[in-house]
Length: 155
Ligand SMILES: [Cu+2]
Image (cartoon, rainbow, N blue to C red; front, side):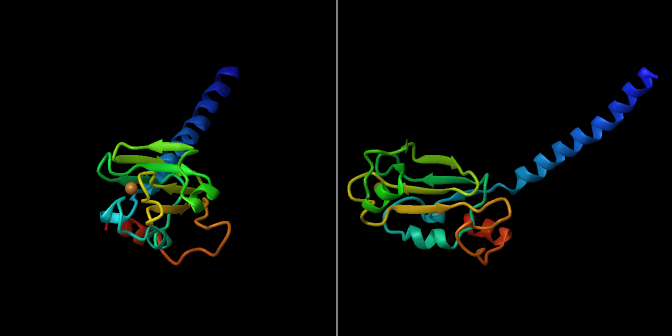
């Protein structure tokens, strides 16, 4: 009888693992790489706040900051430092020119450029990440579908 139960367990567990694998696979395809600023990239001359308001960013998505290394950088800062364009206390400092940052759900991130007065000239962006239901905690769901988000991210 013990051997019979052992076999039974095997049949029960295998489909469960398969299902978990499928769930991860499906979830993985949803994550999108989003180039901040679209094809314009991360540089002076873009209204990044306006850009961000049109893009839906979900948990697991990866932000990509593309720029000429040395001319700009990407600093993750606190809301206060974001408002005042202060980069000295950056929580994260990226400067490769092709910086990737994967976002967590329900989070808000504040990025600025720490070079010269670029932040004062508009090189700053607030990234609000939607939760797993595709909703923002603080406001109504944006009227952008996941598929249009992918199109926006490739512009
Ligand atoms: Cu800059």
